[in-house]
Amino acid sequence: MLLIDIGSTYTKLVVVDIEKCQVVATANSPTTIEDVAVGFHNALKKIKARQVSPQLLEERYASSSAAGGLRMVAIGLVPDLTMEAAKRAALGAGAKVIGTFSFMLTAKQVREIEKLNPDIILLAGGTDGGEKNTVIHNAKMIAASQLTVPVIMAGNRVAAEEVAEVFAEAGKLLQVADNVMPTIGKLNVESVRDVIREIFIERIVVAKGLSKINQYIDGIALPTPLAVLEAAKTLAEVVYNGVIVVDVGGATTDVHSVADGLPRNPQVTIKGLPEPYAKRTVEGDLGVRHNIRSIIEAVGEEKFIDMVKDNESGIEADEGQVQHILDTWAVHTSILPENHFERKLDYVLASSAVKVATDRHAGHIEEMWTPDGKIPIQYGKDLSAVDTLIGTGGPIINSEKPIMILDKATADPKTPFVLKPKKPKYYIDRSYILFSIGLIRQVNEDIARNIAQHYLREMEVTDHEA
Image 1 (cartoon, rainbow, N blue to C red):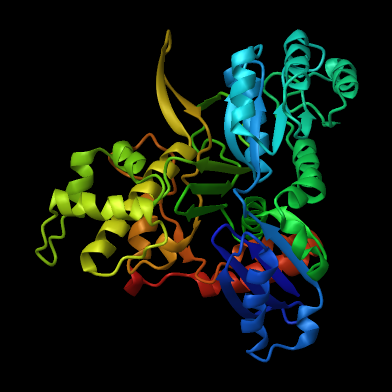
Image 2 (image 1 turned 90 degrees about the horizontal axis):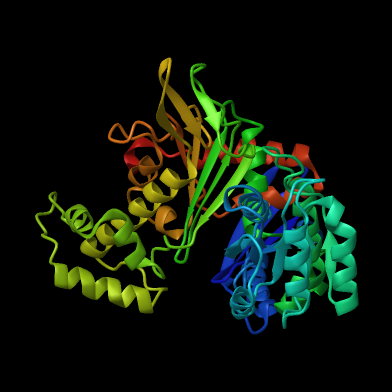
């Protein structure tokens, strides 16, 4: 089986012998956005040069995040409830949420959405049988706009028929999914995820020019982030206490967690929206090339410069030199570190992105005073018991100190109320094979689990890589 990932930068190929549950070969080539088939064939030539059996290349599946990935706008009723539920549903489907809106849309906000130019709009609002005027108003505003992209209605089912009529009269595409929040405190994202995937395969692939590769494969099955989340779910089925995948990139840092996230302390009370078992967050301000300034701001400039200082070699961090390198990297985003100082700077960027991204992803404890005294309240997922931590993305894979970068995703005594893993094992997806496990899962879950279990052993990081 040939698994293909058409990324924004590289097209990656993985050949798997399904009968032996073995990864036979991997290869990559720069993605050619103008015609993605060129980059695919360049990588395929490398595979064939390794004398791979032609039979292993007959069955082909692909994922893609090229041309900006799957860009979505989520619209809900209340920011902390249906809007947040819509956002989580979009992220869980592998989308990049480029805008969120709540309450009744204004004409100005509709113009903002038009400028954002999303691939899909997710329209939510109201529990089933509850408030319906807002979602109907928002449907009318979107239907009357210049927007022509697919819209998914995933709000109050009582309003679904009227919303469908609004879009039918406007001659615009609407697909109805189950309500993302049918009752207060209950999330239902599976139906939305399935509809998003269907639209991705049928329409988005064509809109982004990815259909040029369709003749060579059996189908682009998933957006790449969803393939990685599906891989994390597979890995969680072969380990004991859940999985976290941290993917550091030039534009974003993605975190996937697969764990129940329930409190480990029976005295802790959970508040807020229920967390999905398989959760993905995207930190669009934590890319180690496109968003360097945001990373520094998140850490603090003085602290960042202190971390860049290299006490081992005696090299001091000259702020002017640091700024010059960072400015260059922000413009020429494909540049890799060339010397010890630049590698240290790249390490600090990556480790800072990992720390901030996982701090945001994990749940936390707050203390609340009651007449009976202080009680601990948990918001988000408790990931403290997760025992499998996987790093992927160039800044981690190419680092001389991958363990030290991944260590930033674990519990920090300085912030004890952030519920990150305490003693996980570290793994590195050096060959970018995670996406392929997610694709195989769509074909055969048993085979995906067998490959995941085998590959996990190969990914383990040894102490000398610290």
